[in-house]
Image 1: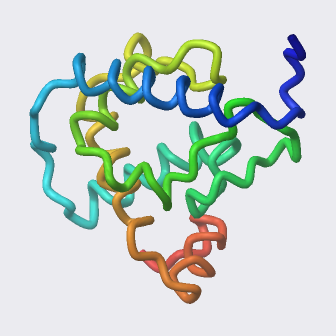
Image 2 (image 1 turned 180 degrees about the horizontal axis):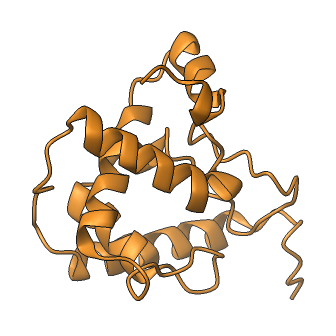
Image 3 (image 1 turned 135 degrees about the vertical axis):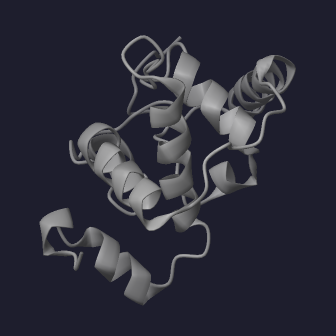
Length: 146
């Protein structure tokens, strides 16, 4: 078997891996709603957290364009794509627990639940991102009006 992260996996491998991962998340994620409101303060905090901890792999706009210019298998999740169909509780579960053998680290030991919920508020901003919105996100945070 070729274990290279640069190779394209077979269709059956992708299907099985995706189904197992999705089912694991479904079974173990709670059904909680995000307890935090999308206030300007919470969004600003979530953006800062995302830019510091997540953008290097997922891209500033959630596109999955990593700053390493490297191949990942499985590919880095596009947070502006299919991830948006997950519930907040499922996203919380993934951020908190990570996903083994994927490069997605677990953040629960170093971050409290409010940190994760604020991050999710920011991730939801990628849902309907326009080209203008993408340009605004890709500017450094310090350039943003307060």
